[in-house]
Image 1 (cartoon, rainbow over the protein chains, first blue to last red):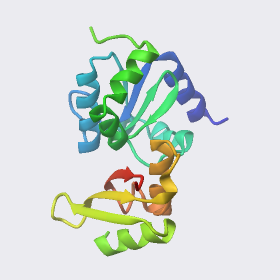
Image 2 (cartoon, helix red, strand yellow):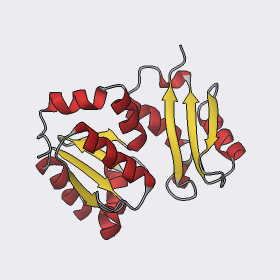
Image 3 (cartoon, chains in turn yellow, brown):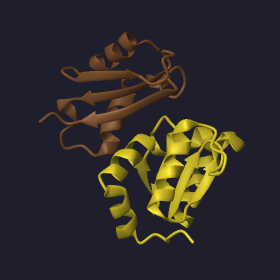
Image 4 (cartoon, rainbow over the protein chains, first blue to last red):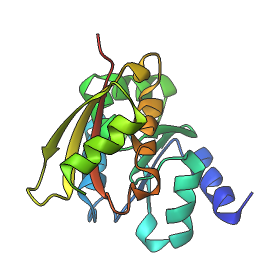
Length: 109
Length: 75
């Protein structure tokens, strides 16, 4: 297992909800990441974000980790959920909120 | 990437699919694709999207930065 893989594993298992994104929640650097943050905020859950622009190793490593070519990427309880399109589809169907409830993730303060 | 190139790549990977493209920014570079394909039946959303991404090989996220994907299972 590569170093990046180990770090990513630790990130997604030690936090209930993790979003790998470009930029930060306050200053997203990409429209897709911005949309992902807006969805998470609507869900009202606490989340950890990782700015891949600040970490080349994670930026490349995360794509191999999930076998998913794009960023953002959402993980809940260590499981890869999807990118921003899937987040939007799930949110609109009420499935994302359901997943958060069922997973028992911490609510936003 | 042009609309015809995107459609061609998806159809090559998913024969029998139908592809609807929308140019989001009018710059030939930001696309939204709605892909309806029988191959999606029974698959999770992640697996469905992976099939679409796979159509672009390594170009996804690079040459094709902005592709919004919606997958539909034909009824």
